[in-house]
Length: 86
Image 1: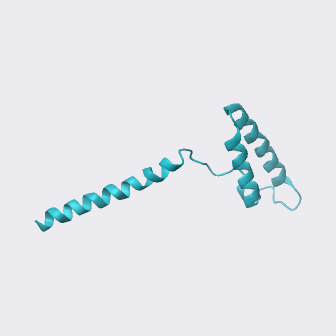
Image 2: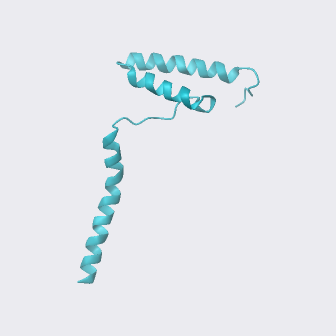
Image 3: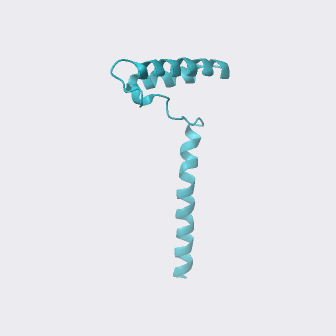
C-alpha cells in the first residue's frame, strides 16, 4: 500500500513539474528571443525596442523595426572606442 501511495504521489509531483512551463507559457504566448546587440543597449533601450516590436501590426512593420535596430546596433558597435573584432 505504501508503494502505491508513493507511486501516486510521485506521478502527481511529476505531472505538476512538467506542467509548470506550460502554465507560464499560457500567460504570454509570445516567446521573446534575445535582442540583437543587447550588450550595447541600456535596459531602457531594450524595453523601448521590445515595445516597438509588440506595437508593430504586421510582419513587414516588425521587419522594418528589426532592420533599423540591427543597423543602429552595427553602427554603435563600430563607434569610437569599440574593438571591431568583438
